[in-house]
Image (cartoon, rainbow, N blue to C red; front, side, top):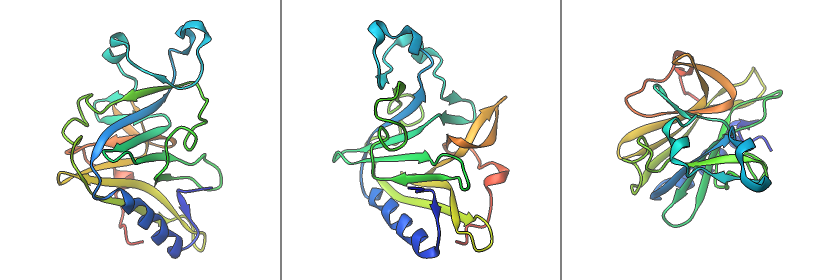
Length: 203
């Protein structure tokens, strides 16, 4: 299932309606799912998702960049009522893009048994001011993929406390943001959108 791509405007409306399930819900936690760069140091051959709790690892987390956060597989948003939403990307192929769905990250964005590192960023410096507050809006931004060939979602925006938090396909390169089909960048205000993501969202 390519959740980032819609074959028609009717499908665009359906995807946007699904994303709006997040509105009115209170954020309780946010987690990023990363490639586990410390996998070789796992004790006893441990496999599967690994919550990162080591203070040493938190000194230089791989997702933290001056321009914002960048996460390998995506972000999982947990609400106070226990509902879970994920922002991730579809495997690049004929189409590409990102999506927001009411699904857990493990099993949807990456195999549930994959050796990943799970970083709870709820109180890690950038999400702090949004935890405990309601999501007032959730938007999927689409643009035509090609004439007569559907629409792709290039950006997801959630609004909390009047601030827009943008998720888009991007990765940090030498303190700049470059487009990426298999990485999610998270931009917090007042960080501007990159030039390549500024377009007329008329779809």
